[in-house]
Amino acid sequence: MATRSFKLRLHVLGSKFHKWLAIFVGVQVLLWMATGALMSFLDIEEVRSEHVVSRAPEVLPADAVMPQWLDSSEGVVSLATRAVGGRAVTEVRREDGSVTLRDPESGMLLSPLPAASAQAIARRAWTGPRTTIAKTLFVEDAVGTEFRGPFPAWQITYGDEDNTRVYIDASSGSVLAARSDTWRLFDFVWGLHIMDWTQRDRINSWWLLLFGIGGTIIAVSGFVLLANRFPRIRRRAKHVPNAP
Image (cartoon, rainbow, N blue to C red; front, side):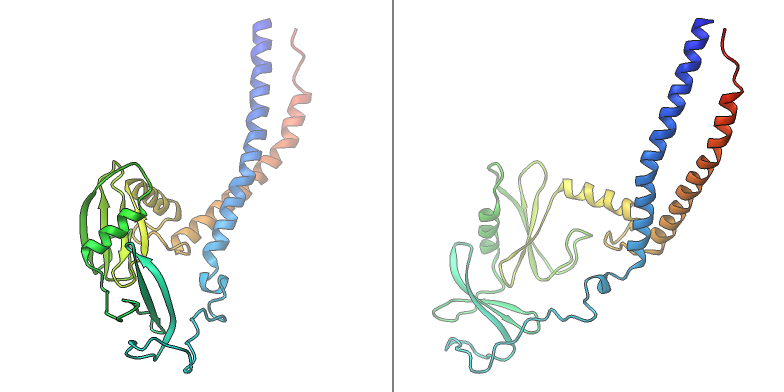
């Protein structure tokens, strides 16, 4: 009988632990579902105030000092001297988003960059264990979900175990993105998480919204059902006869 009493107490203790753990975890699940549904409902452009605030760069004034070799100053928003592949260049950005690189002294057009320059940029960007350049590819279209522009760009693949790839803007020489096999795994899991199996960037799809609302309803109804059981559990506990 002592063994039976011990098993009964263990069962009651386990039930209480399970109940309170379910409540503790359930609160976070409820918050996850509710906030996920809310974020899916909100328009990301309104969240960022992009519908009322312009982020377009200001065009340089007409009387700004320009290099003599610049063929046209129309629509220029910035002139900057920076290092690309170990050499100084002048970067010219225009209002339409175009970027060109020129020699600071002669004004000679340097972009689009050749493969050798892109490889030099990739070597300088690498900070991991010593490796080599395994592959160089000129891309002008989206590469799956891992890179969608701007184009044209250079895809440089290193010879490391994770197949790390960098995308370098052929016009500006900027490192636009770094991808790897680990990134691909994360991207796949992220697509499952936000229920966007193709683009991986839509957090306001109807699927996610519907499942978020459905999950919230399930969590709330679960709390209601659990609360309704408390009086029954207390009444049942009062009528349990004392074990001999």
